Image (cartoon, rainbow, N blue to C red; front, side, top):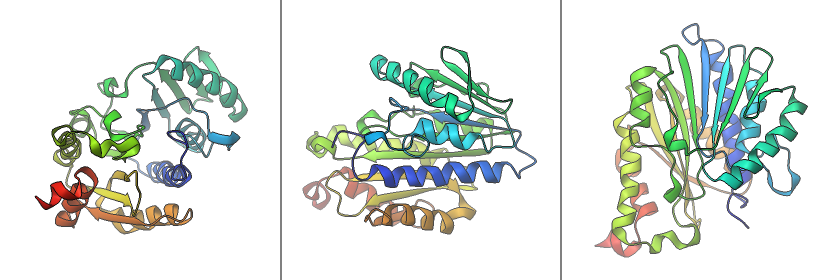
Length: 278
């Protein structure tokens, strides 16, 4: 199947829907939160495979549909770096958003009532500005590249958010061997460790990182979630359930509580057997 259209994709979208849905529900009950800000750093073309339900099977559809349920204002900021892909995204948004009750304000801006404003940017997600984020904002960032080599979170992004708000979560997908990426020189793959280290260094005390890898997956897809410490048990169950539904099992480890297992999982994802044995 083409990139983004594998059998793992529905499981990933199930997990994403659970994460976004919980964000809406919990933030709505928190007096300290006055606005939700969602970054889709790798929006893609917003076209689900095989004509599947738009609101359930692509990140733009998942975010736009869930935002409607929020009792607090939501800013959705979508980024797609490739011009042709971005053009298809605009067409998809123009076709799908009106059916959800959105109205177009400008060529790249849509709104749902007085609650949601959605922006589409033809730019790299790594350039997404955060200077307007306030301490009363709850931020969710989705980083879903076609492979780990297209990671769209800049090195300082997590720390920038931490300095602005205590309420920040993220979901990153990591394809560590699609199209044989493990054949890249080791020095190029060592950079992948730094991508996670940047997330680790920016963690506030009340957050942790969950690394979840699909067992026995040739393309070695894995998922990195930044979530509240108090949600550890629940988030594990949600992740397992989302993938089990499609026949996948996950190996999971938390950075703070299972550090050795977390590190071993990174080694398995990023290095070859020969390199690990050296």
